[in-house]
Length: 311
Image (cartoon, helix red, strand yellow):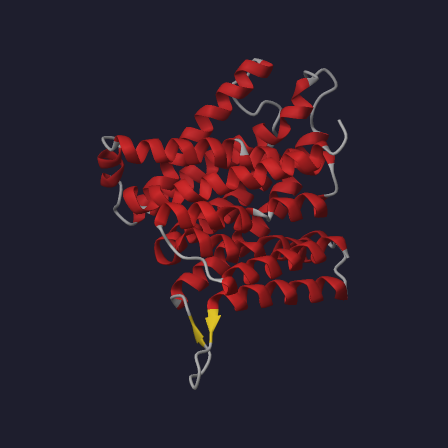
């Protein structure tokens, strides 16, 4: 099918929009770490069922130690660090601005690819990243008459958003390494569907390691009691289930699938449209006014992401 990768990328952007809206709700209701443990545990179960129904094995079959290492490392960086920052960021500045700061993830992924994989990085990329930063600055900075430029958001929330972008970007590069290695260790007699389902099997590995990482984090912070409390919160669990289905199950798996069918730059640019898609539903749900400056900032940031990959 023509433009299949591009269509998948747009579905991913919509999926991540739904995820962000419900992650915002779940983190406020359940707590960030609790929401993440529940989300990744549910994702592991859902992905296991998908693999079982498709290839007859409810686990990432054929994955060797090196595959688990790279995908596990990507989970610790992308899920445990990156998503911890994302969920705390939502508590501080909300999903709308959190997703805006996440536009830094694709450029940071390219920088990580240059540092880790030796991929090329041009001056055009530096210019595009500057455009993205300008867009973010337009949205989060303001200057009233006679007053100096000031932040319109809490500094802590901005730092968490930057950390989230860094975690997601580096985690994506590490997951790419793991996915590529996973593909090389498939035996000749592996089911034909396995190649298509590699992104789902890879995401399951990441979900397993991520859930263990968050569980250990909760144990260290003595927050395990909140899991029992969350088990009786039907509304919170519903929020967690929705963000699980649209996040780690569909969104992450389809994002890995998208780069198999189209240029990674085009896919990353289309998937980075989430800050645009989230503006109006977020404003309707939380009855917030969207300023022209914020819309301009988002559009400039998305332009920067597009320039980063398409120049």
